[in-house]
Length: 209
Image (cartoon, rainbow, N blue to C red; front, side, top):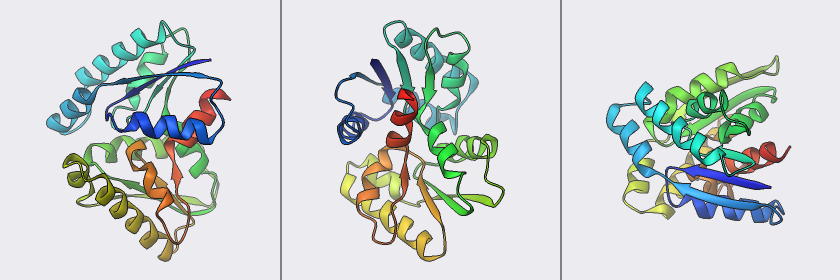
């Protein structure tokens, strides 16, 4: 199967390749396209505008012409995948859809961590829309200062800040901690009190299901 991933951070290419190997998906062909300009535009605009959504959907549609599955790995731009899927001839998926679905099957308090402010609203909408366990409740939290570390190239500091935030939520009683952005994935290996859910693992499993 040919799976094309659209990223908005170059570092996510290695994250998805590593996750694919961990899941034993080496028989599939992965192609990666990175468009950091799309996320930068959303950050500059203060969120996802209709214009950026359409622009992202057009990119996804173009990629779908030579793929069996297209995965949008950016949580800020997530709804562009929904828009593209209306006319694409192959599945166009947002990688955090499966993440939200799995998280909300949990009874109890689910805490969703975001690193960049532009992801807060799209993530809130996504988690509100998915089917929930009757006893599931969720809250979205921003890991303050983490994104600055990421943009400065301090990936180790970025992941450590997220891991510390996840541990703090587990200690407060969260039954499930979710890392909303693919770039946060490495923090799941650094936590001490629980293993957060990550979008590459959930998203790749769903793409192949």
